[in-house]
Image (cartoon, rainbow, N blue to C red; front, side):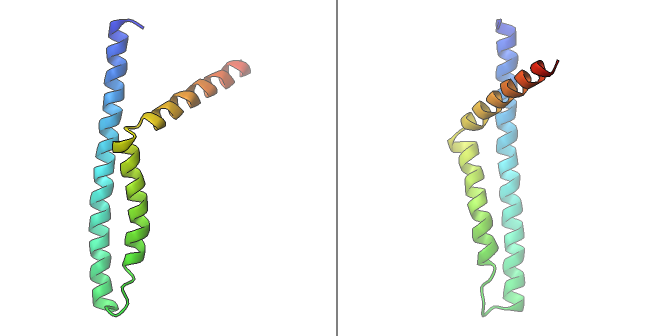
Length: 97
């Protein structure tokens, strides 16, 4: 791989990481808005039973997992898996031809 190809690959990987971070922040905003709405509905309809905690907690676990994959693992595990899958699928296609 020459220097130009290496730069293109680094650029592609950087763009992917930025897209992943942006997707997380969009996910966070939707989580906050929807759960604020659910809190409001809960308070207006059944303030004696705080059911809004159920979706808040369940979705919160998914949001935490999304955070870990984007910011703590830096996408390295996902990217390594993706590369392995590309190689595997390429091998399958070669065998078919």
